Image (tube, rainbow, N blue to C red; front, side, top):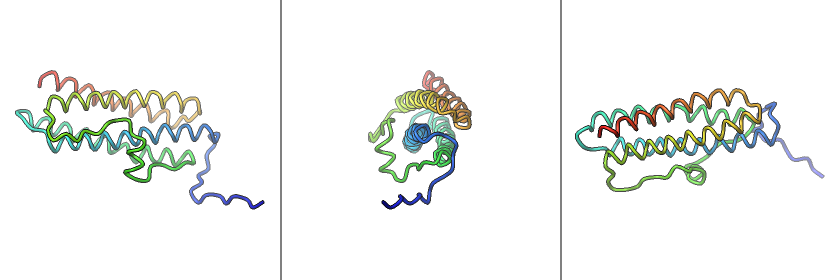
Length: 166
């Protein structure tokens, strides 16, 4: 029987195979949601209107940039565990849990609330992933998840406070 050839993408890791796959699955879900949240935030940034336009426009742009900045780090963590990451927009769509918003018009107030709720949903996924990576003894990913959780909580807080005054 012929031996299966080693993958050209095989990355050495000390994580057990099943654990590494669980970590990768959790991170790929977070990555898909991060891209979905990034694009929704940019969508709302482009389409926000009303008396607080400038403030909301800048807030959403800052938040979108922060979300996008995490995506490369997330994908590289997946690769460091010896796995592969997302490959296409279709792959993102299959894995994302954050819903798109394709409405022709969304009020600024509703944009803020929807983004707040989406960031809180991302926090919940980050906490779930934290349990998975801690069980796998993936200390590096565990530490980074703490930072991403803090960032998403801060975004949700800013959106909550901003929506209260809208």
